[in-house]
Image 1 (cartoon, rainbow, N blue to C red):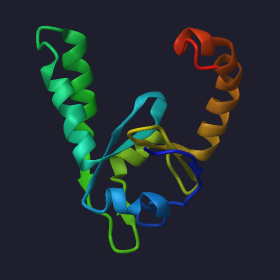
Image 2: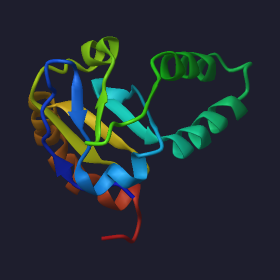
Image 3: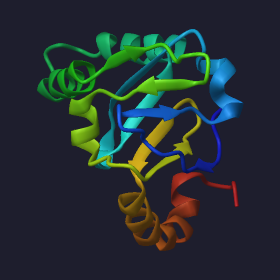
Image 4: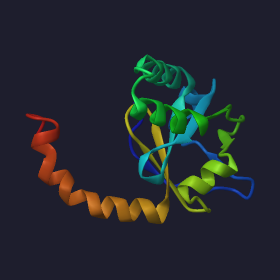
Length: 143
């Protein structure tokens, strides 16, 4: 499970270092793709295969399912981190997420998310109150 917030920097080649505690989990390969709210999703390869399988099980008669699958999979890039735990985020995905040098990587359960740091700060500030307000609706009995 991926947890926490990390602030690596993109280097001049568009690479980031995976947080050290996640490197073993991602050492065999990962997939980076478009996420919602203009962030990127990073999955370990085996987890991405599960997610892609769920998408492929959706009915192709559903336009929404086709649209989602197209956007999600067309932006996907499989990567293998180097020995230092670095991998390249393709230019098109960096552009999609508005990534420059300052990025924030958050753990989101089965995946990591990569955000432009300023965008993440704005999102978090706007979402913190609703987080408190909707807790009972989203996950009844947890708080």
